[in-house]
Length: 237
Image 1 (spheres, one colour):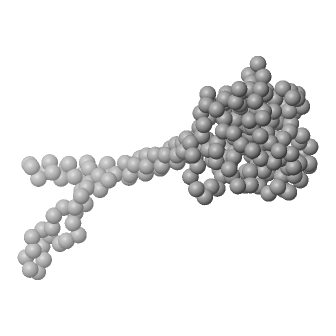
Image 2 (image 1 turned 135 degrees about the vertical axis):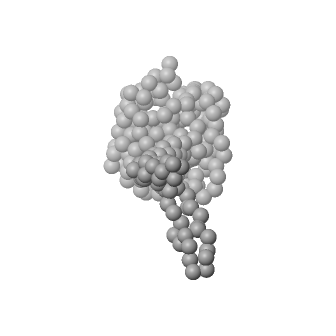
Image 3 (image 1 turned 90 degrees about the vertical axis):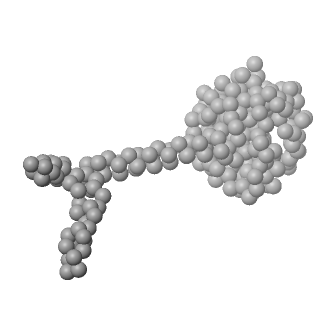
């Protein structure tokens, strides 16, 4: 009776695809060997498929999380907001310092624009400043340029706009500015001194500076015209 029940149980397991697999060792041999032990039970096909699907899903979700984390936390300047567009990461040879936070004084710098005129952030005290980090080889930066130009024309002397080009050549930037008809101040950060001071790892990166020299807001990623206009209005008051 017990043998019959065991056979019935094994038949039922076999129908479900989970019958135990016997060892390949013979149950008896010329040397009178003892029957080999049973191997581990086979995993049902449907359960294997579920496990594979679960692992694949976990890997995909992990990749998405890491991508988002990399963009917004690990390698770009901390921001008080996120633009609509993407971020192009910079190839930096050495770690940069922490980016200044909202409410802190904006790091001062001196440079020369593409027309040979001196640019000193300290001299602009009393006027709000929009400091924009970008490059001619950055797709989102090129997309933004006409909208930045429109804001520059709309607000005129009420808002000082300084575009800082990183990892670019002066002549390349000069040709780019002329071709697009950009009239706002453009500086080439040839030694990465300015972008390093602001902890910029990805472009475009926007820093909105109050008339008193403190940072009002920052944004990483390309901004829409409405976002640009809202930030400009908030600075001008």
